[in-house]
Length: 378
Image (cartoon, rainbow, N blue to C red):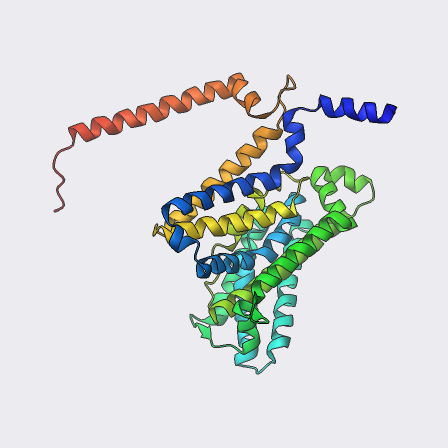
């Protein structure tokens, strides 16, 4: 009886943010998904919700699911991997050469490609843990290395027309119903959820992200665990490179240029903290789906390609800001958005921002009023 009374008191003592925090990872992206769906239902319902377009959204999402699963582990332990696009491209190039020039069976080339991706992830992990290069700099440098190798090997060629197994992985269907890439993507997310919530690997990932020094003192081999996470990341990037090759039935050295942006955005939008210690595999899944829906919506609305990068960057900043505001506590114990606006420093910064924006708008108006006829010549 006393236990139930204590539990009731504890639950009554929780703030709204405390109650909401366990669901933020999935509620945030789901709310944005519903917002996009509602907006497109008003603006372009016929084109956006037709079966072929929904299938395109699923196929686009499936390409990023394996990488988002692995990136969740990397980011949760306070890491980052900016080389996944180059890993995917180099994997696809080498797999293509093995099949087309050396006559390797397609199934063996696929296995070699995924193993090669894992090896590149191992190199990333060793650079970070053994040479003590920060994750950001180390993976950015290795991105240049892997992309350079891809360019050297391909020599500007576009390798195309692969065996049926490769195209099945990229755009095939199982029993003429289930798209093969979607099945691969969902299985990877389910596997990642199980690993994160039911294994020591997942628990150690969260522990290392929360406090790496305490984890090391507790007997956890932090460096070895981080290497394992990067190996998983490399393997999933290699798999994504094979899926992309099969989807396009072609590969070139400049393939997958924005993989790192898209995957990191999806994981962060899904509630995994860039500062480590908090992860959500369901949130990462929702984040992948959200970004694919957003980009597809921009395409459906005939908005230029370059605005997709702008939209992705805005979504990342907005998501990180919201999660930080909802979880940060100030010195007085207040938390959430209210505390952020009540902080005197933040108020001063907002006043400065308002003054700068107001001044900029004023100058633009004055410039417009004083502008003469444009002179295209000269």
